[in-house]
Image 1 (cartoon, helix red, strand yellow):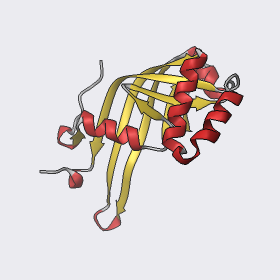
Image 2 (tube, one colour):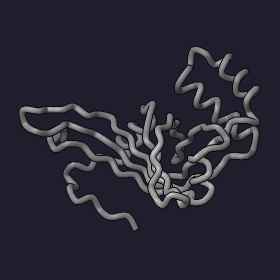
Image 3 (tube, one colour):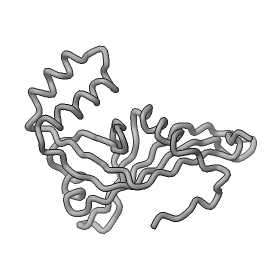
Image 4 (cartoon, helix red, strand yellow):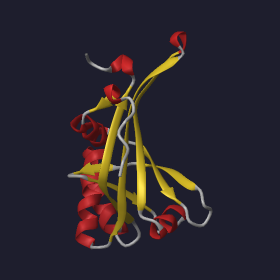
Length: 161
């Protein structure tokens, strides 16, 4: 279903790709928008856990409407982008994920994901994060992206020989 990478020497391992997903603090989520007929790309702050990416969101808006109409998504993380003008290139490392999104509705599962987000993005404020999670639980949307395919790629200059 997913094409093989054309420049396979630049492909990074699944383990390295997952490590990048674990560490990233931002990514771009791409959703097909049935209303406009265009892809809709939006920045998000994901947390990776056991083959899933989780993001939080307001429970309404363009992203939510588009995801409800079509849950197939892709997500892109750029870990490195170092411009080398003298050689007219960049040294990059990126990961692209394909998956299917679902809305987490179970309050216990939502809390567990919110705790993972706090642990990743504000570990020194766990108590405050837990209090806010409980306070805003009914308002926040949690989106679970079940990963179906991951591809990581880096500039040939970064490939270890």
